[in-house]
Image 1 (cartoon, rainbow over the protein chains, first blue to last red):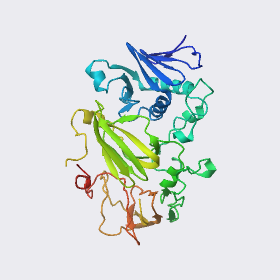
Image 2 (tube, one colour):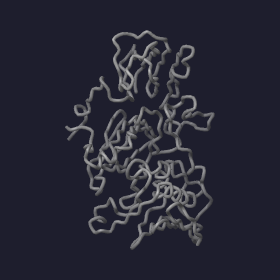
Image 3 (cartoon, each protein chain N blue to C red):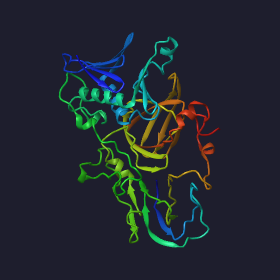
Image 4 (tube, chains in turn orange, blue):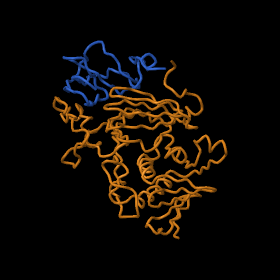
Length: 330
Length: 87
């Protein structure tokens, strides 16, 4: 067994198991994988997840920098972002675990846990499996270790500083960049907006075809910023199959369904008790309250606009009761 | 989001919005300034409304629908409580 030290944390990297996979430890958590499952070992017990589901969830947690609030990998294991530190837990948001005092939580520096998760992803993701891709567009995660897929798991985070397509900002997608239209978006118009700038205003009279941009996304369930107004972030994303995590909100989050349909399961954030089911068709708008968790199901590839409020004071203001968890009273 | 919409832009010679004022401001008349140009956007398109510019939307055909990303201000109308579907 070799030892590597992270800032404030000890990372233990075990020797390869007989299938070729490494085991990883941080704090009192140990992660092991076999052909079909991820094993999460913590003081007193072990949690187990299907490896494909685990890797898809882990990919989002890493790519989003632990996102806003809670990333439940399933109903037992997950992370809570405190924006600088991260809690990694077993059973913290599960009524049965909490009721029997079986929850287990450790806090890590965000940068340490991100690096740790990246190491797991790199070692456990086999050649041909892309945890960001829709199931129909990628290979299998199962079996003994065979190669890797670093290109897939190290995609650059896409976030506009101001507005998609402006000089020096997030670039548009196209055939020339090796980004073809997705198989399920062949009906999306690629027509560009008409621009008629006067001389000297070429960089300010600016418009893009957002749907064409989204139609060329090769990933699913990955909100990416395309325009910024102070803390208001428009984060459209293309969805297919199941949201690989159950997202627990620490602020109100707005959804605008741009195409097709997504069915959402909405649950109480802390207990997982069902709250409601929301079916969103193209043009529908919903507000996900700050005290729920949600998971989406997209039967075919769809476009979803996620509108986030990036104000860093919000989690505390919602948690303290200063703000109600929903945007309006009926 | 739907329909055809023209966005016409003017760069005012003098600022028409007080510093620090947030949200959209309705102007009584077209401001004196430099014509910046215009854009025609359709379903799925996204257009930039530059800071400090005056803008006007024009629609010549069937009604269009827009989603405007802005900050709450004097012209904000909050309809969510009225239009949101409830049980």
